[in-house]
Image (cartoon, rainbow, N blue to C red; front, side):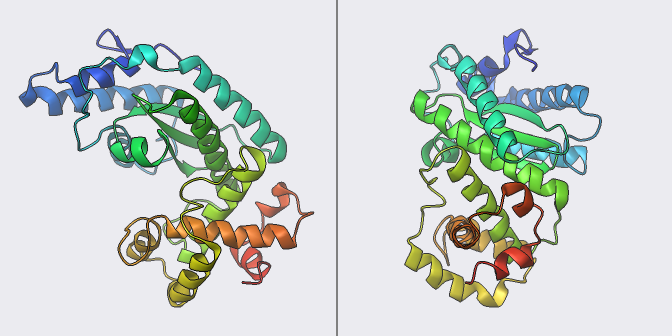
Amino acid sequence: MRKNITFKNKKIGEVISYLEIGQYRKKDLYQAKKDFVDFLIKEISSVSNDCAGFQTKKRLKDSITGGIFDFQKSKDAKENYYNRFPVKDILLSIKNSLCRAYSALPSNKPVKIFLFPTLQSFVKNKMSDSSGYTPNGESIYVYLSVNPVNRKQMINAVKKTLTHEYNHAVRFQYFPNSSSMTLLETLIFEGLAENFTTEIADKNLSPWASSLTDQAAAEIFKKIKSILSSTNRKAYYSVFFENKKFPLWAGYAIGYRLVKKFRKINRDVKWLKIIQMSYTEIFERTEW
C-alpha cells in the first residue's frame, strides 16, 4: 500500500487543507486544483495499467474531481486538519473489513483500493464522513472527510463503505458494469451490497437503507413498478437521489428490503452463489 505521497512538498491530506484555506491566490485556485487532480491521475496510472476501472481517463478525472472538491467553503477552513486525521486506524479498519468480506465472498481478481480526502459537505453531514464508488470489478474508490465530525464514527463508516463497495466489485466480476442496467437491477444491486454489509460488517443500517419504513418502501415500490425496466438515468436519480418525487435514498431503502426478503426466504444460500445469480432470479425469489 502506497503511503506518504507528496504534492508540492505537502502530504496528500495537507494539500486539501492547503487548497481549501486559500493559500493560493483566488485567481490561481482553479489551476491549483486542476494540477492536484492531474497529479493524482498520474499516481493512479502508475499502479493501474488501464483507467483504474473507468472507460476513459476523462471519466476517471471527472470522478476524482467531483469526489474530492465541494462547492461550499468549509466554515473551519483555517484549521489544519491533517494532523488529526486517523490514518493508521483507517488503514487497519480497511484491512480487517476486506479480510472479513473476502472470507464470506472471495474475489476472482485483485481489487485495488484508492483512498482520497474529500471536501464534500454532503459526505460530511449526511454520510458519516465516508463515501465510495466502484466502477468495475477491480477498483474501489473511497472518499473520506478531511475534518471528520467524529473519528470513531468515521472509522466505522469506512468499514461499512468498504464492505458495501467490495460486494459491488465482486458482483461486477460476474455481471460487468453497464449503462443499460434497469432500475430493478439497480435496486437489487444496491440491496445486495447493503444486506452483505449488515451481515458482514455492522448489523446497524446505514442512513440510506433506513431512510424509509417497510410500509413506505412497499408503497413507493408500487408507484415505480411501471418503470422498473427503464434504463433512463433520470429515473434512477429520481428514485435514488433527487429528493423531489421520492424521498432521498428511497432506492437504497427499497433495494435493501427486496434483498432482505430474499435472504429471509433463502437463508442457507451462500454469498458466493447469490452474487452469481441473475437479477431476475433474485427478484423472483423475493416474492414481492
